[in-house]
Image 1 (cartoon, rainbow, N blue to C red):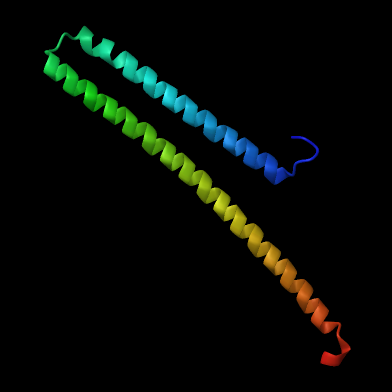
Image 2: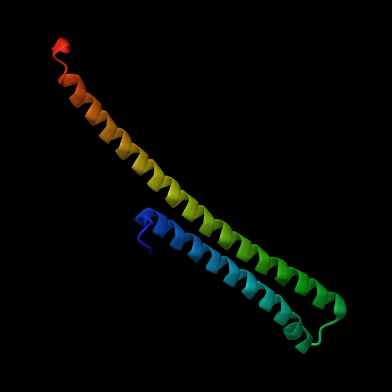
Length: 111
């Protein structure tokens, strides 16, 4: 964290870094899984049609898992950021409203 950035900027930078690390790690693990899958299937010596069907099915299942996990991860992060933004907005509105009320009471012509 540098001197010029606020705490919120630092938290957002760390959140983006965590999301990128999870994304890259899961996508890399998916590619390694798909690359290793064919060797595992070949070791059982199945007929080619069954091997191809299993390879396609297992690859699709791996892709579905990774995409669902990343969608949930990014959705939770977006929901958290949205919730924090709404709380900050509400607090700013309350703080601003309290200042307006003080100013109204300080005017002698309205009393």
